[in-house]
Image: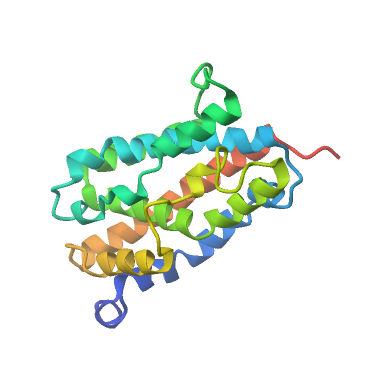
Length: 222
């Protein structure tokens, strides 16, 4: 990373700029495009929601242990927690015994394992995964919520789409600004910031791999 550029470019802006291409590739993946274009059924949406549960359980199981960490601690904000909402969605989508037969895709298992590893051994790397997921949920995730409500008749912001509803965040735009300010102030030198950026790229790779595997499970009929 160019030290001069780092000095004049906020870290949050640098992350967004460097990962823009990967971010776009993930958001326009075949699976997500098919889901947003309503070419896939609720079973595909359900399977995706299942994968999110494994990822967020890994993220949030580590939150308490990182609450006092000098790097990751400031990001442990209860307003963001999604596991409980995901479980309500899965109960709606799969029924009361939703845990029965629930299994991660190989890419999901690898993603969750990496999040857990970072939480245990490298909190700054955990921040990369935290940022990649939660800020994405507050932004582009709302498009999928809207599509799901219109396509499968879920109650507006109700069961089935609660994962995308941040009830404790009354002003998402202001919250995201505050989150980016935390990134700009992160307790890391330039070398560590470059490693965080690299881990953000890795997070996007994990998400892309999940979408590819989901696309394999739900190919569009000719």
